[in-house]
Image (cartoon, rainbow, N blue to C red; front, top):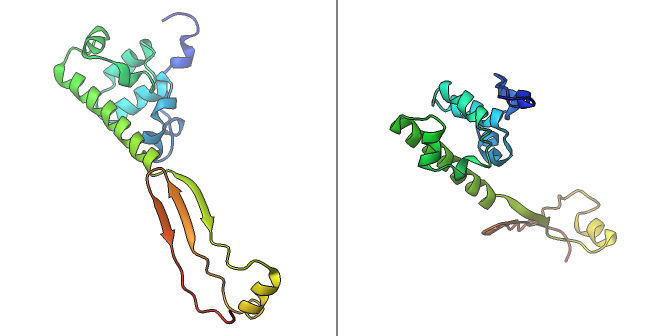
Length: 154
């Protein structure tokens, strides 16, 4: 390793790559080599490969591009370890796709009253709650929570 490689020194801090498992998995494309190597070691692949990942500057964004030959050139000789490495990366990609699909794109509420006077009359000056229907637009579906509250007035 040459000058400037101090940025890729391995740290034992778990807070460096997030707090929960879902946070870890969802943001793998933004990981630097240090964070990616730490995640690989947490997945049980072994500490001997963390130095290799850092030395070859494999970030979370580059990891899915690694081929079988690349892993061999990096020094991962054991076939089982190469397969486990690729399985870990595939699981990260799958979890990222699930997170993208379940991301809320827009959220809104039904407009129940069109003036303050109507709202005041229909809720008996605020004695009855306003329960508007809510809408959530996800990337692949819309979720509607329809409410039929009892209201005074029209």
